[in-house]
Length: 109
Image (tube, rainbow, N blue to C red; front, top):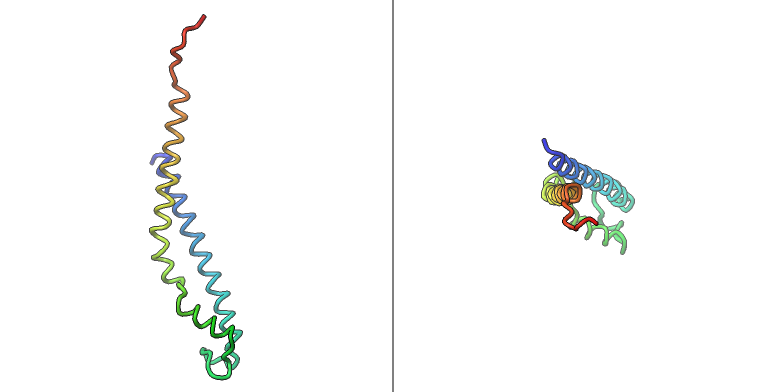
């Protein structure tokens, strides 16, 4: 396997893993915030628990992406980063090869 392909695969795996870790810990923090407003611990923020902050949290809960969705949503993102990194690695190797094997056409005196 070429070095360029290895660099691209490693970059894609790193981006995917970092994205999954971020969503995992972000979901844990959000669940703690929801639990803070859920005073009676029934899993819902209902009548007595409604405040401005709890309403904002409930609205955000409807828009949030979960870790289960992140498994699928991060695949294209990580592949794009992997392709970009692999392409950059390929171009840098070509530039180095050209610089190392450059023919000097200037006349020597």
